[in-house]
Amino acid sequence: MVKGSRHKARRAAVQALYQWQLTEQPPRDIEDHFILDHEMNGVDLEYFHHLVREIPLHLHELDDHIAPHLDRKLNDVDPVELACLRIGTYEFEFQPEIPYKVILNEAVELAKTFGAEHGHKYVNAILDKIAAGLRSREIQAERSTA
Picture 1 (spheres, rainbow, N blue to C red):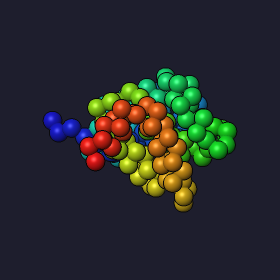
Picture 2 (picture 1 turned 90 degrees about the vertical axis):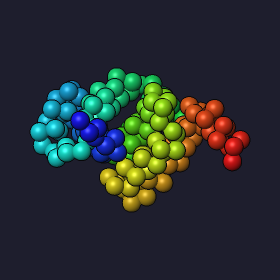
Picture 3 (picture 1 turned 60 degrees about the vertical axis):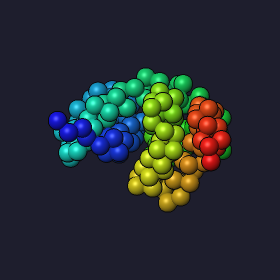
Picture 4 (picture 1 turned 180 degrees about the horizontal axis):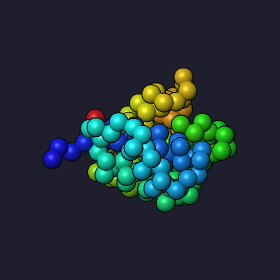
């Protein structure tokens, strides 16, 4: 069996998490409807399920990492950008096997695809600060070899 794309899983997860943020439906209900209503060919479904289930479970912890770096209240952040920030922060903290630059790049690309015109710059700036805290050893190791 060919494993699906994590990039496509993140794309789908941004949309599902956006829906969750707006409707407050249970994540499993959103997953089920999302899979029925969207083209999921080539998607790493396991990773999609993982993100959509785990991010709401760790919401307060993730938001505690995000909030200090914002220039506005968490509730005032665009919901698409917030979904991108939560995915990136989740991966920084709980997916250490994924290089921080990959996480940052993916989140920025998602914000470019789904967010406001300059939303990707905001997502990049916030996640860069969060990475400095959660991935400081990785960043230092990379800088020392450069």
